[in-house]
Length: 326
Image 1 (tube, rainbow, N blue to C red):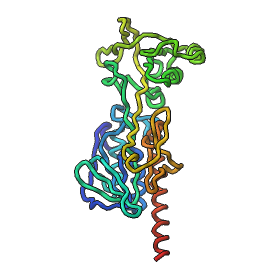
Image 2: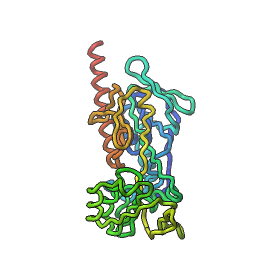
Image 3: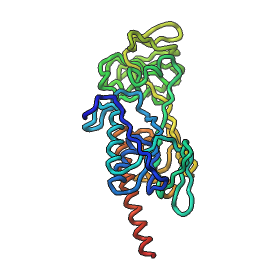
Image 4: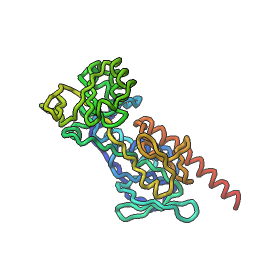
């Protein structure tokens, strides 16, 4: 790729005038993909990037054909370089407000004090992971404390797994990760064993997952690697990788300000969208993890592409219809 893995090169264009056809809020895979399509479609486009991608703790990303194993930082750096080739502007800033103004246009207020204007908006603000408050979890997250078997299961295959119960989905998580290791222990933590259903217990037994009641006090780390899980009663269980289910917090503040309809899911409230990502607010699309919990990098890029192509076509037809009226 011509660059050492993990080295981030940020392309920031400071020549923006404040008026665009499309403003993309969020500079992750979804936002950059939408911007790439729009730039190639000769649309004047701005990406507002706060620089806080969800996968920052991860050393690599997996499951993206031809990019399997690439560092997230390098992936985003390449994306920024690509959109710059097509005249897309990028500013390092945070969008703090978005409102609909005259006609179909939008105003986006930035934390730096500037206001930019657009005919269409793409919201790609993603979500944040809130980790359980167990000592050691945050410091190891993205290394040997992980959450997605499809992202990291291969890399820790056949090791001694632990699964920390944090939500109703933790049993499902323990069953899933048994595909990558036959040595799996489910730590119930603050959940009572009586809260598990008969189906849960039968499936866990069939998968060979050991169930350990009792609250987890801390992780044991030696020589910069996870070696065990210690309970409040002092017992320690040797483990090499720990799966957790962070609480997902959708970053829907701007969508709410714009009046987009949200719907409750088991993973939080997300916008109601059509297959292209169009929200219930005309002219506003949501893509990536701003649209749903389960969007991996490859899915997010696909959603951004679809939204970008849809927006270009919609703008074209809108302009042609206006010309016909004139």
